[in-house]
Image 1 (cartoon, rainbow, N blue to C red):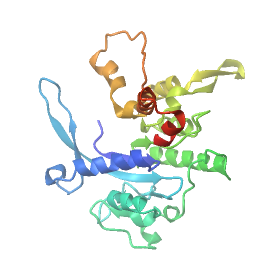
Image 2: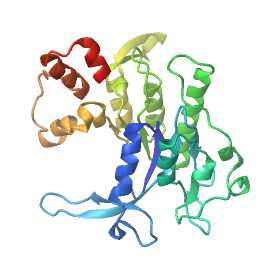
Image 3: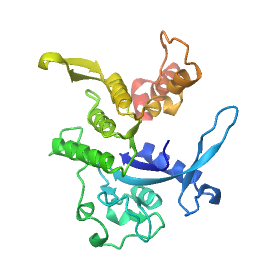
Image 4: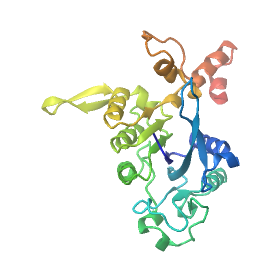
Length: 293
């Protein structure tokens, strides 16, 4: 049971921006603060017979984007209480910068009591926190994309090893032919004992090569590999938001009908596809439909 939610955001497009805004809205009232004034969420902790909830503080510790820079808290001493408390990324200011086309950088790092790190004050942070982190891989094979993928994986390992983060929220574009780099990032996160929440269809839909005996490889569905890894590392791999705009169809089967045997599903589990087909029924041609979507 998590005592604090520490989020690392991979990608900061519309999905993760909406998530952060929702978290801010849900923790806006004074009743959503703990005794130290930190933002908290009401998390259900009881059952249907004895329902209850508890306050769980949350903070953002890392944001990695492809076009707007990256920011993270100092990792080597993240868990040491200073006179101003723990470090976090200023969520409201990060949203503001993205919406105005500005870059994310170390000036967004504040203490959980709201004291901002002085600009240029690398003495207050570890030196490498002030250096630019590589963006995740360019899907079109841009310069040093492999290096960027590797560096992002190393950062995820460090986030897990230090305990600076405990949940990775992945919402990045991926190569439609391979599902990368999302699959690699999710595997690394899970192996680093980080819970994963993904809004990406690639890891659910694609297959990957997995080593088998005698040095051979076998193609397996990435979904089952990730679920197995999550079970082995005692973390969660959640992917509800990958289809149908987060409608809880997977949780429905897992938690409300555990004894039902699912034989097949027929239909469109994608809101964009549903919208296209609905518009086609209205005689909108393909060119107009493409422009609309």
